[in-house]
Image (cartoon, rainbow, N blue to C red; front, side):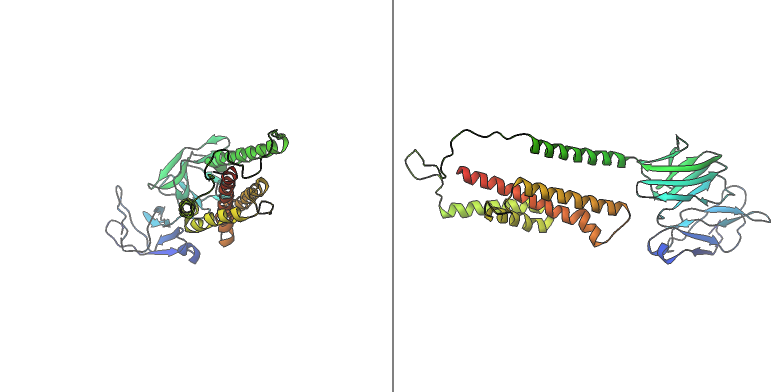
Length: 327
C-alpha cells in the first residue's frame, strides 16, 4: 500500500533465485501518484516476500510511479550501484570476477551513489578504485555497501583483508614445519656411551620386583586409561573419535617393534603430511565454490581422522617408553 492505496505488484525471477532466497525484482502493476512531502509505503506482514528496496521512476507524463527493487535473500555474485537520486533506478554493476575473498566490478556512477552487495555487512571487506579506498556504509541495517562519489567510473576491487593474515599464518606454519624436518634430518644424533643393560634390569633391593602387579591393579589401570582416551577422543573428534583414539592406541601398542605400523617418527610424520595435503586440497575446493561429500571429507573428515591416529601413535610411544623403563 502507498499512502493507504493498495497497489498490486508483480515479482519476476528464476526458480533457482526463489529456492535459494536470492533477491527478486518486483514492479508495480499500475502507476502511483505521489504528492510532495512524506509518502508512506507499507507491505503486508502475511506476504511470502519481504521488500528490501523501493526505487521510484518518474512517469513520462507527470508525477512518479513506484517501481522495481529487490525482495529477500542475498545474491550470489550480485552487486548494484544504487543512484543517490529518487528518480534514478538502481543499475547493476558489471561483475568481472567474483570469489569468496576477492572481487572486481566495473562501475559508472555519474552522481553520488552506493555500491551495494546483497550480503551482511562485514568490516573486513575493503573497496578500492584507482588506488583510493571507498568509505563503507551499512544499508537497511544489514547490507554491505560503499559510497561512490559523483563521477566515479572504473574498476572497483573488493578484498577481504583477514584472508591475507590467514594465508601468512599458513605459510609461516608450513615454513616452520619444513625447518623442523630439515633440522631433524641434518643434526647428528649423540650416541650414549653408557653400557646397555639387559631388560628387565635385576633389582638390587630385596623383595618383589616393581614390575609385578596384581591383576586387579592392571585392570584398574587399563580401565582408567581407556576412559581417559575415550574422553579425549570425544573432545577431539566427537563420538567417532571416542572409539578411534583408544583403538589407535591399542593397535600401536600391540604392534611388534619391527613391524611397519610401529609408531615411529617416519610413520607419524608421513601421516601428518598426508593430513596437511588432503586438508589443503579440501580447503582449495571449498574456496573455489565446490561442494559435496568428497569436498567435505577432504576438508574436514579425513584430516581429522588422520590426526586422531597420530595422537594415538604418540600416546602409544609414551606408554611403550614407560613400559621399557619399568614404570
